[in-house]
Length: 302
Image 1: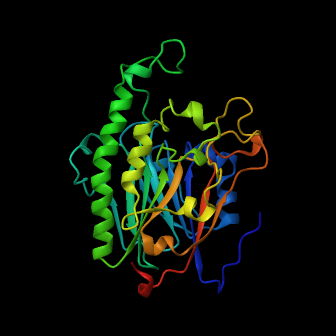
Image 2: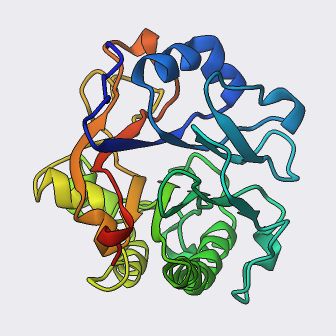
């Protein structure tokens, strides 16, 4: 891949990437990808390290919330210029009732960009589990928990719906578009899962997960930029299991998303997943999801 020449193109790119450990991703070649691809904004999830070990990123200002759970979670936003403002759930506690238990976990960070009227948020939504009635001992990777992980995720989904609506409206009042990007641990439609029929009884593609996704979207709320641009056809996938031949056979899911306010969504012109050429070249179990937008000017606001 060669670095794109965007001089005079009137466009900018936003990448979302669950790195599954920034230290491991950097050992595998993350910095080379970043320098070659050169996105204008990069949203990272699952840093999985202390703040002192995230490091610096050449050419970027990094806003980071690693959270309080050792070796877990952590989100960041890399921008070409230092943001006008940065908000995390530690510095600015979530207003939606029900998110308090997640506030210190390093799952959400948003920034007001300095070079365009846009607020970008990076989210790492909690992975859940199966409801109690679907749990079958001996057929699960994790021990049955009576639905505790499932209920935890559902609490987050319910509360986050209110929170993201508030944040979207706050951005609008400030004259900014709003873009939510990250690993949402939910695949929305059958086009987002290779084997969608059996996936209907899996965490991330349960009917209630998909119904929640419906509540976030809307012509006056947020638009699934990837689906809008890619069209109603299979893919693009962004996650493949480390195990077996999933990566080689392209059997995976799209749980990484870019959800934009309508004014910004209308400017999306291209979607690319930077899937590596071979399994031994993988930076993570996810691949970067990159969307190109026409340049955002004040008069293009919703």
